[in-house]
Image 1 (cartoon, rainbow, N blue to C red):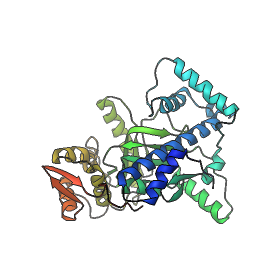
Image 2 (tube, helix red, strand yellow):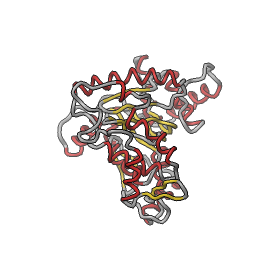
Image 3 (cartoon, rainbow, N blue to C red):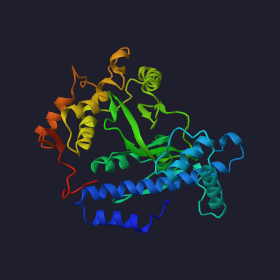
Image 4 (cartoon, rainbow, N blue to C red):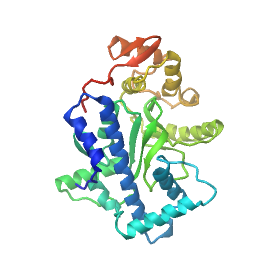
Length: 347
């Protein structure tokens, strides 16, 4: 297992939360910062590998450079590059090349990716262990989400290496995103991840694709396009979703309700009005622009078995959280009690 040593102050934050797991806000902050720092280091190591490729089409494009540049200067990725090749971008490229030459930035090749691990609360998680990483983030009420592709192949390669089984070396460019997302992370039976701020991005991304669908997961980058353009993009991708679900009728999450309840709790970390809740979670049952109402899947439901709502289900799910003691109403607003200071976290 290969790891990236954290700076002392970040390791101290994680260690303090592990020693006293009764401060959820502090643990959430420590985990988010540690993941962001490690994934940015890995991004630069992968960028170094792309720079050393002989084939020009494998080397990073200007858009890829732009995303890494804005990550390291603004703190988040700006999707649309500037029309001007400004001095800052040129200087950043020179700095990265110099750090690679001095081995300050070490090259990370695809075959070495399965052996990489990220420091999380309580130990380490492989780069492909997005389920474990997102479970920790969710348990702490984080607005962040970690996404990696090709996750299945990466996890299989890591498992084979751990038990000593013969396997084909992992040879694909690793794509990952880490950042803040919209409250609703499911739409019917597919995962629906909409980034509002990208805090770490792999240089193997497709820098020209603001929206993509893969194996039951629809992902929207933080894209500043007009709403009409977004509507057109969603309509195009939903045609791919429908075709995929026709070919793979068992594709999708096992329970839409369970995920929406988790998302609601996370969203209600801060007090919210009923109107705010309805607006934030309308996409989870109707689609971002009404696609679930307009596009049918022959012989199938958009929702897991026995979970198709007869109407707007959001208010009823909030009432369930209140009855279950997970949320309460205070001064006309709803708030989840799971993430309050002094509560013990368990991840």
